[in-house]
Image 1 (cartoon, rainbow, N blue to C red):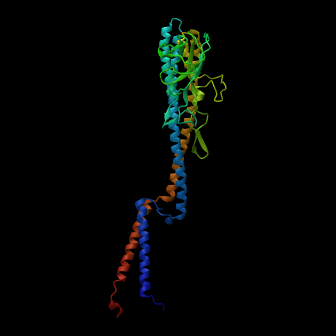
Image 2 (cartoon, rainbow, N blue to C red; image 1 turned 45 degrees about the horizontal axis):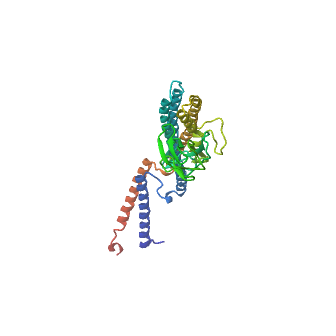
Image 3 (spheres, one colour; image 1 turned 60 degrees about the vertical axis):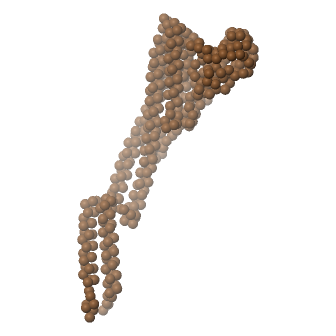
Length: 390
């Protein structure tokens, strides 16, 4: 007959107690956490599937953050187009008013002052930023996409041999006003702001020396031999220094959305990025500048022409809002899809990982009862004394 030794007996009791303790701890942890898988060893296959689902959800969370970023950018862009359109509506109202033959030059100059403010306002809107990045310059988000350049020209009535060229100027500091360098004698000049006739500079003429025409350090250089009465016109105009690249953001598996709108297309629509002319569109800035110059020149017929251009610019703003609205609809659809996926993924994870609390509590009670019974049995068995062996 095989005899069970005391050592074997005690070892068996320790094994039973350890196994029961592990089962009890597992049951307690499942009730405490509400999960039936708390460690990979609880269910290696299930744990692997849960990791896969969490990886998918992590990607979806990134897509959701991308969508939030795109939504913010498109909403701000849409707001910019709406505000620009409001400015244009006011300009259209003013152009109709200014075309009235009963207005005189002084009254049109008052309107020109307001139009100057409108140009500056649209410039501010076209250079809108979000999070320190410009919205409408393509990939060129670290610099204003719209700046002013200068066109300089000798006026047709000049009789001297003077020439003019741009000097040094800060394209972001050039104002929207036109200036005229007028020679009072062959050796002296004055600079006046067209429209207001305010004098901004005077000086003695030295051929080739820069002339600060606006008091902001922006200069032109006149050479040759101008004579008294000669004048030179300095005209600012808005140019685009962004690019035509799309900023595409991934918002789902194989799904991207264009987050930016090309400002050039809507604010300077009459000229393509390659320099060619788009006859079907107008420049918003060019139309407002043309309106302003017509007012300063008290040119009623030119004002009549501007009315149609401003009206077309209003339409381009509406077109831009339509483009943005279409993208926002795509974004909303992608957000709804991600929300539904998140619900599905959470449901699958819950099926694998979460515990049925009623079952978990029942198992805990049963495991505690078994463990207590094991402890009791072990205690009674181990109460033997030396007398049991005499």
